[in-house]
Image (cartoon, rainbow over all chains, first blue to last red; front, side, top):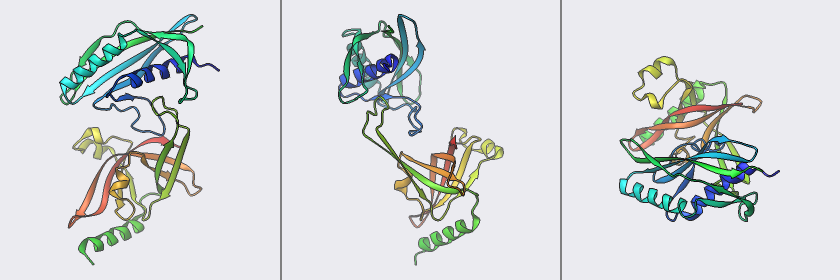
Length: 139
Length: 141
């Protein structure tokens, strides 16, 4: 059965990871086999899927991007890299990663609009967080 | 025989005698092969449970220990203290990110799984005699 929500989540993770050169994209998730799966990674772009809003025609998957670096200049560079990538098109085709090595491009897109980073104050890291909404067609 | 070797033997013997838990303690190593780790799709997950010998002493921490802990972040109710001989666990074991401890009953059924939060060695003459490990329970069978 076509799992549109899973396809959107997989697609966005790969979109970031495959296109951010020299940047570690670290997905945060609960995994029974990985007790550290939901920990933040330093010197990486952490990606966590949060709220889900499902509708008959269109739906939204909220995602939090946490850029956490030990050096502020590096953090700012990566924020700029993420913005450059996300603003290059504001959409990407949805793919089916049932066979991860050969994903199938579907006749759907996921889109996003605003990309706004806020600073999270920490004594040890430079931490910027962006909460954005991925919109996709549910039909 | 060096002092450290003698001490390790005594600690191991003491642990064999104490047997602080009625469960059998195993170290569990997890490996994932294939799939796509980025999106969380493993193809093959292998779990290898190895019984620890000598068996470590496993204690649940109590409220008083939690209250008096120097770092509240490292200890809370639901934490366990494990004292293990260096004969049963090496530094490489403890530094393995996929290591956990599982407690099983006599029928071999998993009762509890403990994940390591921190560990400290007991050292004599530069040799690790035993490990003082804090672990947290995240799963019950």
